Image (tube, rainbow, N blue to C red; front, side):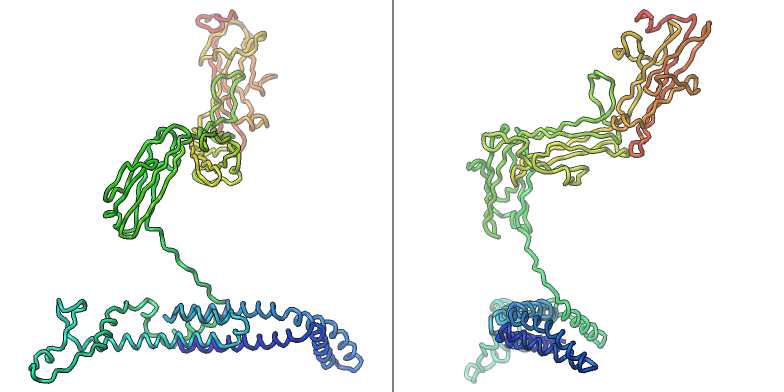
Length: 554
């Protein structure tokens, strides 16, 4: 297979040579000459393609204009067009040839680089550099395989013994057994060096170890070669990982907080390394294998510099960490319903809207950085929210998930490109409920005391106000949360019942009891879990004992 690579290399050199000659001829022609030549060629072709003399003349004149423009353009831009074609051929077909050289174990960088230098040198790419490159790599591969096989065969003619040189090589025992008076064959030092070189030769690469290839394998390789000649194959370099890693916990500490720095390395060389830790230039810890160091940060804005120096068998390493304690406070508020003048916090219910506000305390030197000068990266359930992030965007608003019991929000704060703070919180979901209050004709709703589960009616009339807690305010304003009243499990209504007010009057005399029920259901599909209900048991007539209405004089 490796000898077949000479064919595409030779064809590529021949193709580039043909393009070079063509564009060189076009370049030496002036745009006028190129236009005349293009017009003549086009006119001749169109004339010959016509059936009659008259039509041939007209077709020739029409084609001459287009051919003249094409010829003039090719003549004027011959060099850039030729260079673009040459580069395209080198990237596609040439890249495929190089990839196959690597596949066959014939990738030698010094030869490949020389070939590419010849291709990119002006006025030199007409030479067959691709053919030379493939031929040179083949010779180097054959030379390497032959030397490896020959030196291994020579090494078998020697006996080895422990303690006789670094490779355990000894002269043949029959030579040592000869008399000191008999002529002794001299030890061939050149062969000896070749044997040493054979033992120093590395194991074959994976590209050199392949099973026998039959006709099917040859056909498959031919198909791969054809595909590479058409589209080429780019190569990618692999990066070597850093042998030292540093783990800082927490990454952005606050004031008076314990910070732990750990050093980790690839391999076991850190176990015997001399590690020195310094705080603000003063050595605070040192020794063999001291891989971790902890300290307590200062006050807000008090900078601390920690330096770790590592003297190991892999070489010296050093790293400096700058800690400037900050604080990111997060506060949230929910857009849910509460009664007027309510002194408590409107709690979040699943599916409602809420907002989180960041209050950063970040210092740069001795100056405090304003909130608008910081960059905020908001996260919702560990997922970055790009549309809510950016410079000065210290608020985060969102509609909650009705199927989750909490909303987890976090923010990373940056000053320039440096991360200076982190904050996170969890907004718990509360269940909505309904509370009933007595409503007076003169004083309005009496929000200072809610009605208990059962009361005794003093007068002949009562007005009840239903107040929903923790329902979505946006949905309530749209009218998608209607009040449903019942009296003894039968539907009840009144003039103000849609707004949560119901008035009941005793129509006859005597004693009895009744149960008022009210319920709310959010009809928004995204907030369907918001539902609540309550009931009030009323006794009326002769029983006028313990009633809250006696307290209000009703």
